[in-house]
Length: 97
Image (cartoon, rainbow, N blue to C red; front, side, top):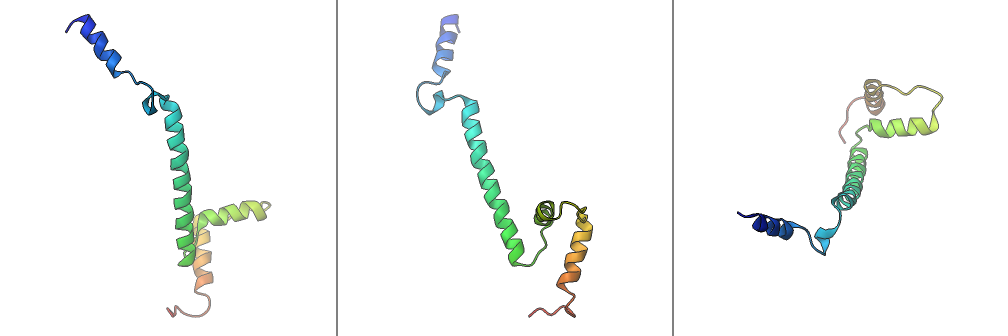
């Protein structure tokens, strides 16, 4: 392959006008924002499902604690789950219905 053929091949490989002409970083940042929004929606959905089924949500507790009770230290994750289980089953037994 001659130098002219290599130059022509490289020129053909360059992006032209259109969606490929945009800088890669701009496209990646747009996808990153969209991915971040999708991840945010997914985490909110998981939190909703946990709340519907009565599963304790430590991250939600930490957020609430930092906003409303910043003057006291938060419970550890282990303490939080133990407290939530005691609260859930304190009414006498484990009735299912």
